[in-house]
Image 1 (cartoon, rainbow, N blue to C red):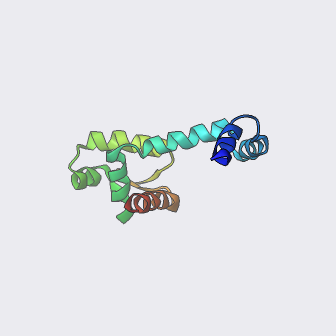
Image 2: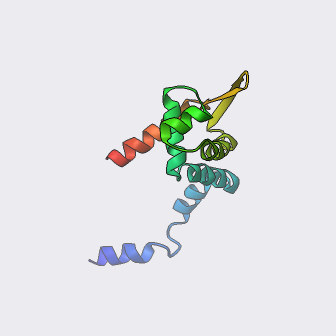
Image 3: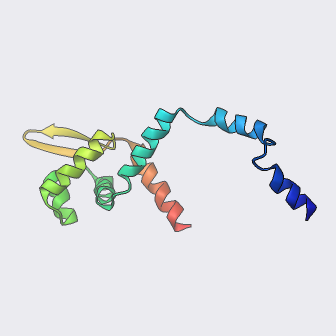
Length: 120
């Protein structure tokens, strides 16, 4: 019991200086952490996650995404602007039609890891 008390006293009472320095040294700069938090905010919207998931299969135009997800084209366009601004989707123009796809394999990996995590 005395050992538990002494460990509890030591926590936060200046005994962890070396540990704190190690943690501080490993932390990325605040700007990087802010950008990371902003990226994860994008995944906090079910509609955006559905759109990303739909793009796993193939490139799709706004109307195709809207039809697949039972949404309006304007709602899809709004979400695609956010996804594009956060470098999660890319687009290419074919005539008058714009096709959207996942920006890179990292997007697929992020979602796959999230699904794996919640399945545990």
